Length: 344
Ligand code: UD1
Image (cartoon, rainbow, N blue to C red; front, side, top):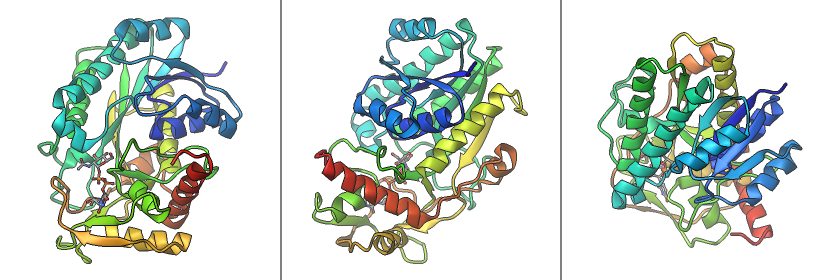
């Protein structure tokens, strides 16, 4: 019998890639998604990539009754990967209550339902944003949590605490918190990728949309940071590598290999790349020249952050492997495919 995993937000950018990797590793996947920032076509594309159609329920995790009906319908769910959340930093500043309600209540509903249906473990998508600007780089999981710069960032911090408090209170569940660095790229098949709503806020979708002519110019937010070339530094992690981390984390929970009931792992490459280095790597990987211009800093940006992924490497036996050139090429192939499909 295949073990059954529920993936909330499973048609989203990280969710869809994770569903494919779970299926490739022999798990039976049920997706729950309200399609607020994705599309039902993604289910077809997951099937095209993996050869297996995942079960799909259009349900909002805020709707406790509807979510409970999913647990009841799909017997024997062993683990949950909880992606369903709002993720736009700027929007969260404008609409904090929307973010707090959506991101906190969804998790609370999931945590309440888990013990009632015998679900053993949860993987939560957290973010390196919890570290703010770390005092030491690369940043380890022991680094202190800094005051959040946005309501979005705060929901990640509070959700980590909600999970810890729930486990500490005796709930019979285990958890792994994965702190992602900057996920980029697309599936090599170009059937799955990131589909930003409107003007992209994140760097790589903005790069590919500029390269293809949707945007006239990319703005580089600041070249006066205290870094070698003056632009910000990030740890850009390939989306499929990131998705694979969820599969090994789930196997760890279900195989009862955890050292503690709540574990935290940095999911990054261990390598910092500046915004300008990334732009040049994109140009080299694709042969496309980018029209970009240096502008002022963006409010709330961290100067530099990259992961120490040793703990994940050693404990999970997981490592980011894809070269940055391949990742950027995959992002470009995805953008070309979107044009072919008449989407963007
Ligand atoms: C942000 C969030 C992170 C979240 C991620 C995905 C913070 C501090 N970071 O990461 O938690 O998980 O988004 O939604 O809240 N840049 C440009 N031009 C652009 C776009 C970006 O120069 O058009 C620069 C930014 O200034 C930054 C870098 O590229 O230095 C990366 O930006 P972005 O892709 O938005 O990710 P983060 O801000 O690192």
